[in-house]
Length: 174
Image (cartoon, rainbow, N blue to C red; front, side, top):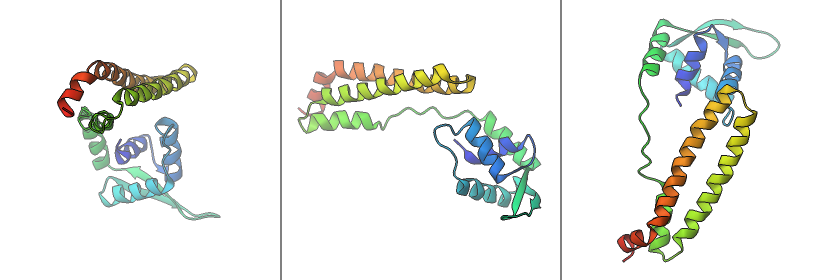
C-alpha cells in the first residue's frame, strides 16, 4: 500500500493535522497494521518537499507546534493517477512455502508434514478471519473476504502439491 497516496487521498476531504491523518488512516486501513507517528510525519515531509501538500496553518499550544496539511492540485492529480493505475497482480512465483516443500524433499524430510502444518495454519487463519468478518462492518467484511479468497487459493495449491509429492520428489531429488 502506498502510504503517501493514502494520506493524500485522506487530505482531499480537507486539511488535517498529522495526528488526525494517523487516526483516519488507522480507522479506515490500519486495523492490522496501525501507522506509526514517525511514518506519518516523514511521509508528510516528503509530500511537502515534492509539492503535493502545503502547510495550511500552524497551531501552537501547550505542546509542540501542530502543522495542518492541505493537498495541492499536484497532489490531487497524483492521487487521481495512482487510483487509475491498476495494481500488478502478485503471482507468488518465489513462494516461501514452495521453497520449504522442495527443501524438505532435498533433505529427505517429510514434505507432507510441511504441507499438513501449513494447511492447519491456513485453516486457523481462515477461522479467525471468518469470525472477524461475521462481527465486522462492511469494510472489515470486504478486507476479510480478500484475505479469505487468497487463503482458499493457497489451500487448493496445498492439496494439489500433496497429490503430486511423489512426482515432485522424482524431479527435485532423484
